[in-house]
Image: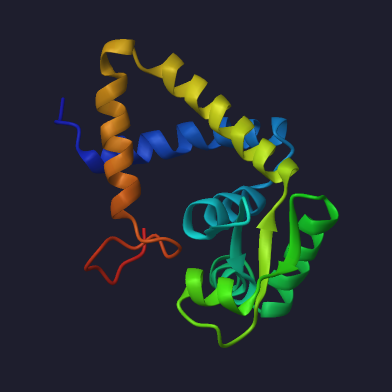
Length: 169
């Protein structure tokens, strides 16, 4: 029997995890792009006035690059998320923009995650944590956490490119 490679393992893992992730998102009443958006704002945005926020223009660029062909498509998507009360459109002051984004010039429009959006993210986190706990014996969980953390830090968000690589994953 040939030796298994990382390539083989990944191509068994991803299709096996995909339906699990989809089921979790459905239970949490989120679609993939909504989960990505909430998670992206939480982890790559700024904390202002006890809210996770991101400049609307920055989020639009990311969503357009990943999911939509036009900014109008990403704007409509964010509007639908706002209608579902997962995010809200708001603005920050010039001083907040300078302090958190390095300049007081440009639009001060931001997208903020609502309490419902935060609750849905927390629910996904809890369910994914349970799946990982079920998959791995407790003696391996710390090692798995280290590997997942390392991989998550190495991937370039939002492109999914590895550092120093022109190839997306």
